[in-house]
Length: 191
Image (cartoon, rainbow, N blue to C red):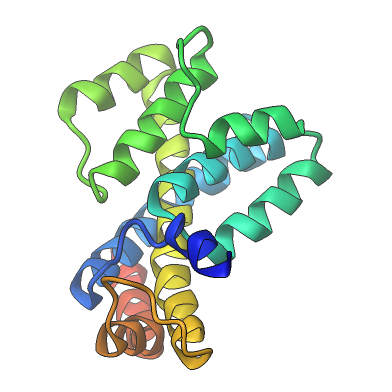
């Protein structure tokens, strides 16, 4: 039973190089994300829907558990959580649905969205709000990439290694934060 549960997670494994890029993009988008939060555009429900959608695509076991709990606390129904976890929004009837679909697309393409998908998001919102949504997506991508490596390593310690993962990448991503935070902090300080 536990092995079946593990296989529903860990859909994407990120290399150390990919993690660096994801972390860099998250820091690049932090200002737009914070502005969206401050302006009330990115409320807790909207942010958690984005978090759950991206986490579903990436398959981060740790983030899934955390964000399901947080989603329930902010009033997202279990039915909506299940819909996001089954990969479905379905028909894009609201602007939020467009944002959720873009979030899934972004994660599914490992942070390299198609230009036409980005333009669809910008057309639904405006550029500033789209950048704020992008910030939320990039931040949860960073959390997912880290959580996938850390979770896979924890499963390895429990003698239940995740298929397709290896100890060098798990440790590499998990420990790289020690190096990447000061490097990227300095880089973004001067930008």
